[in-house]
Structure formats: C-alpha cells, structure tokens
Length: 316
Image (tube, rainbow, N blue to C red; front, side):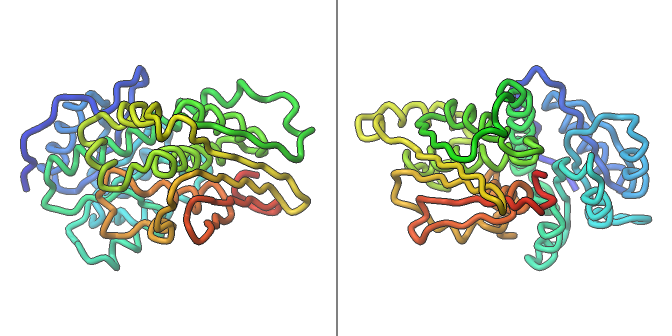
C-alpha cells in the first residue's frame, strides 16, 4: 500500500502547531502516514492499535487536535475507539479521519452515525489524503479562531430576549457567530454551528457558490479570495443575510435568511457516505448533530431555523 508523491505545502497556514495522532496496526502504513503528515508541517504521535491510542488519549500526556485512524485493528477497532471518545466531555470534539478498506456505504454510514465525519478508503491516494486532512485542519483552525474571539463579547447577553442582525461578508459572518454564541450558556458548543450556517448563507446563498465550485476553490486554495471577489460584484454588493434570535421559555431560536435561490438542503442534513471523502459538505450535518437540537429549512432552502432547548445537553 503506497502513497503517491507528497505535498510539501501546509494546507492551512497557522501559528498554532497542530498535533495529529496517527493510528494503524500496519507498521509500514503507519510510517507512511507519519511521514506524509509531517511533510505538511504538523506534529505526529503514533499508536499501533486502538487500545494503545485510547490509553494514550486518556493519559493526557499529549495534546491531540486530529486523529487519523485505521478502522480494522486488533485489540480495539477504530469504531470502538470513536464510540468511547464520544462519551468523553473533553475528547468528544476531536475530529477523526477514519481509514477503511471497506467501501460499502453501510459501513461508512456506521462511522458517520458514531461521529466520524472524515473518511479515507484504502488504497489511499495522496491527493485525497491531502484534501481530507486539509478540510479537517481548516475546521480545527476555524474552531480555534472563533473560540478565541468568544470572550470578547460577554457582557449583557442574559438581559436580551430578542435581537436581529445583518451581515454580508465572511468576516462579518464569523464575527457575528462569535457574538451570538454568547447567548448560549456554553458558547463553545454553539459557535461552530452558528459559523457554518452564517457562512453558508453568505457563500452558497447570496454569492451562489455551488458544491462543485467550492470543491475546486478549496483544492486550489482560493476559496476565500473568490468569496471576496463575488461579494463586491454589482449584483451582489447589496445582498445581506438577515439574522433573528429569540429566547423563549423553551429555548433559543435563531433564524438565518439569505437572498439566494436556495439549495437542496435535505441532501446535507446528514453526511452522505458518497461524500465522506470530500473536502467540505459536512458542516450542516455537524451543526445539526453537535451544536443544536434541530435545524429546519424552508422549502426553498434560503432560510434556516436552529433551535436549542433549555433541557438540552447541547449547548447548556
């Protein structure tokens, strides 16, 4: 099993040093993974099976931001490790890229249902590996950046029951997500979902960047530049995303409306196994599963309402 030529460009430039845990019982494969990830500029810790990986994580001797793990291993399978990690309040949010030789959608769906949003099927192509690792690192960096900004907006949120906002750019969407997250008792649980829905309204909604186009833009590392370019075009410069937040006795409702044509939202409420190796397209499903109790779209797909109840274990 061989990886193709390695990429020597870090997919996400960040001052933060990302630590990756690579887990595989195949010694040669583990060394290839280690070499490849190190070539991207990240620190790598290795484990030869699921049990060793879990013990390493539970001991807390190393900070781990991303796990790259084989699915079929002795002692403890990759899926068993995932199920255990998802029960831990500290480690349940660590992104996991699962390596599998089983291309059956049913098997991949089991992992997705357990919380694995990134998949790689063997034999592994280096281009796909690079793309999926880039997607995971991009999500990690966004989460770290947004969480660092949350504490800038703390005062007075418990006094507000209803408010409305407007935004039009990526920067405004990210800043607004940080601001609104403070309405939730645990802002870090809501922040990524809020950012996903707001950014989606800007790029897919108002600026009409479709799925395939975004795939190409991310592969060419010019997604943000294209969003900025489209944002100042005459047909787009006055478009805005409207946001309304309402705190009721039963919980918090946030409604986000864009001026786009809508999209086939039902395809993205869960991660399709056929898209598990794509470099994006899992954000709405993650928001629905991890940030809110439920997400509902209008028929057209240009308005979404996210609800989190007062008795929920998500965000409270």
